Length: 270
Image (cartoon, rainbow, N blue to C red):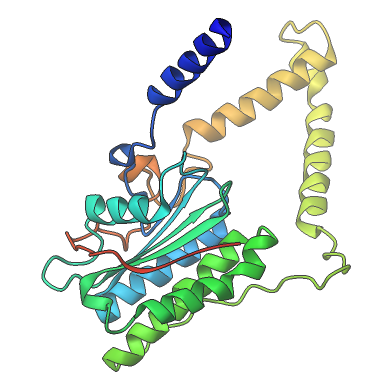
C-alpha cells in the first residue's frame, strides 16, 4: 500500500512538472507556418502567393498554421494565443483569420479577428472545417489548407467587392491510377551517364598527374566539378532565405499588423 502511494505521488509530481506548449516561442514563417512539416514546397509557395494577393486586394491577413500536438492544451486557447501573439490582421481593422491544424491530435480551429466576424460568422467557420475533413483524413494537408484559404479569400473578396486571383488547381491521380513516368529523372540519369563517360576519356590525362588509379582520377574530376559550381554560385538562384525562422520570406509577406481576436470562430476534428 505504501509503495502504491509513493508511485502515485511520483506520477503526480511528474505530471505537475511537465512542460506545457509554449506558444510564445513560435514565430511566424510567413502566411503559412508549417511547424509540423506536412506541406510540400510547391504548395507552400502557391499558398503564400495567394495569401499575399488576398492581403493586397482586401487588406485582410490569413495565417495558416500546422502543429504536431497541443500537448494537452485546448485548441481554442492555443489558436487565440497565437493570433494575439502574432497580431494577425492590421491593428486598425482587426481583419485577420487564423487556421490551425494539429496533425497528431487530428484537431482543427478557425480563429476569426474582430473585423472579420461579420464576414466569417461562427456557422460558416464550422461548415468550412467540416468540408476539410475528407482531405485531412487522407493526409492531404496542403490541399485542405489551400482550398480553405481560397474559400476564405473568395468570401472576403465578395463582401468587399473585389476579386482575388484564384489558386492554380493541382491535378491528383484518380484512385488506383498510376502517375506518369518520371521522365525528368530518366533524362537526368542519362545526362549523368554521358558526363561520366566523357570524364573517363580524360582519366588517362589526369593519371599523369600522379593518381593511383582511374577511380581516384574520376573522383577528383567529380569533386572538382561540384566544388567549381558551388564557388561560382551554382544552385543558389532564387529568393534569399531569412526572416522568420530561416524560411523563405516569399517577398509578399511583410509580417502581421497587430490585429486581435476575441475567440470567435469554430473548432472541429477529423
